[in-house]
Length: 247
Image (tube, rainbow, N blue to C red):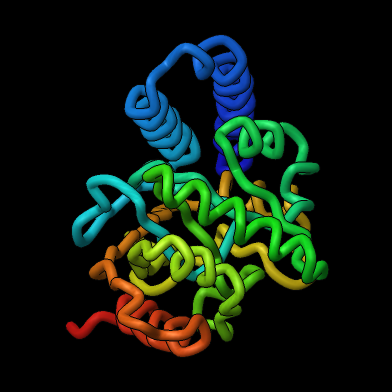
């Protein structure tokens, strides 16, 4: 029965992705930015419902930009969850745009791609991010640079924080976690690490019971004269605190 339910979720999800691609092609060009963000948020929330994922948001979502948000990174599902909480433009590694169907959807939503192994490309992306922040956008980055196991927070890369320093924009730390609402504790269904393939991770998510995505927003921080490495360390400590709130 669980596999039949997962297959039904998969069929509905594919239909919803195709609908999203159609919306991007036919609607995005003539909508205002607030209308586009609302459409992205509602589409993302509907997709979480189809996948059987409950969304729980704690703290205050950003009201407007310019703002750079930094989050821990667990799964391919992260972008969908964070867009359901509050839409933003993401900075993601370049191979994401080659994901079947999802890549086209993520690209259409305005994601900025970076070749993480290329120092020159990092400079290009930082310049573009600073431009978007000056224009009042809300951007989101995953400073760990890769997905983790949901238990340990990896070191933060500081390079992309230069965009916020250059644009004199605040940075808002947030923490993302997947919880088993039935049994308690972490839910490993959406994990996308090691040798796990994208298809295997998606199927594990489709089969999951009691999957709850929790987003905890912290407080926005101005640069306060910090260099990017110092600021990166401070933000990592805050994301760690948000991941493990006191009882």
